[in-house]
Image (cartoon, rainbow, N blue to C red; front, side, top):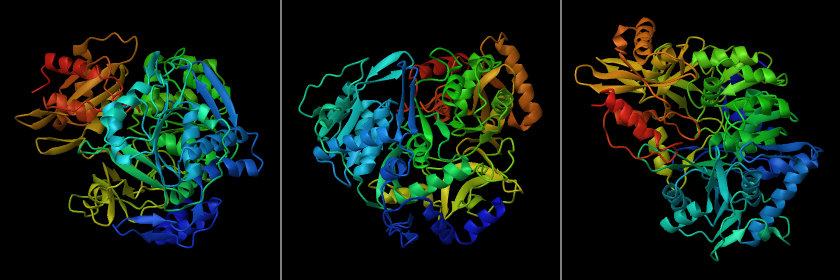
Length: 630
């Protein structure tokens, strides 16, 4: 299978290419229409086909002799719990819970909000909703009640499914009081809250609205899979919006199933029976696509992990999981590996484990710096593969095709070539295509392939204004970058991660690449600080590796010299501040926009996704003491 021929075939006739890919999944009724345009200007794939996503992920494999294979390996160093759930066992759990929901009045088209930690019941909840044709909206189990309330009012769920607690490192967080507060704040009142009790904390069930997860399953009839249209929504997933109001990205059933099957086999190189680990959380798109639906639809054994990479008991946790379950491939954000490296710079803990089952490691979600790439590649002796996608797309836009005979070679700094179906262009501010090597706005020519979200829940106009209006005929990714003359894509950062120094537009990502290459630096963020003379000046915030003993003034001088040598004097990189930690989302992304606001002394709203709120005052004080705020 050749990349150039496949990519060109998808380019020449997108509809025909994806009509052929529809045969990858087991439809109840095959679609007669492959692609149609919606009334508000987007697209819908396989709209009249009939299927069920839970059937594809669970029942299909039981019917085809895979029932005794493990579907989910549950590994929770946070709670000291492990389990191996076969496809047959998962079918029983999902059918029973779906039956319980049905007995409570849940029907096709209803919305259900899920607020749960990484326990198997969370996957059961998602699949049970899909089984009934109900639309689930998973809210990450760390959101504050006010943020949950916004989502309750937007999605109007009939029920909320939750657990009594989650675990953050050694801290146990009671979920039920948070849900109760969110309902109190919300205008919409769900019919019921269903609570899965965990032994660490037992939630109080103190009103008529509350139901016990297991009690409601007693004596119910297991539910069968309900046929839905290809265009029917499978889930809503909220992502950050520039206005502060989250956007409810809507994923359809048909295109989603075809796209995930295509990606699992062709992009990630996984086959039925392989062991796959998506090291993320179901609250994010990775958890939807490549912890639950993708690997299960593909007949893999998926790792369902509750914990952190550097705890329980040490920074060797990832390597232990790889050995124990004979992981063939995994997906992770670079942040996790930087955290491991910070605690174990030489990677000594990995030597304790047999990692021979591992074929390759995929990273995405943020920039893969060269030092992390080399460290991980040298340590594991397998390909470390950078690739790029978004919540809105639901599956990768650029990546080597590891399931093909000759996957594209890696190029450091690039997320590789566009995947067939994604006609990626680099446009200037007027919508004119840029020459190879010139940076601009990364856009995708319409229509994009199946699996991409084509609407925002209850707000189609916002989808159009957010993604389609800026460059008519294109989807605007919001990322900046360039394409080289071989078609490789380079993402330099969000389009607002470009700073203007004396009229020169410079990527902070490029400076971060240089700073992170310093042997003492574990991770860093470079932001623009307002300057009366030059407009903006770059400032580096750096975290040192464990055990490093270097004076702040010395490392600042060395970093200034490195940036001057590798980026140029025009970058005017003159300041670097050593900090103990950087503010991040719970999915590991550095909150650069907030850091910019701190530097500019602008007001900011505490991000609902922040991992630790106490970091921001800490950073603010350090920057003020260093004279970096103005």
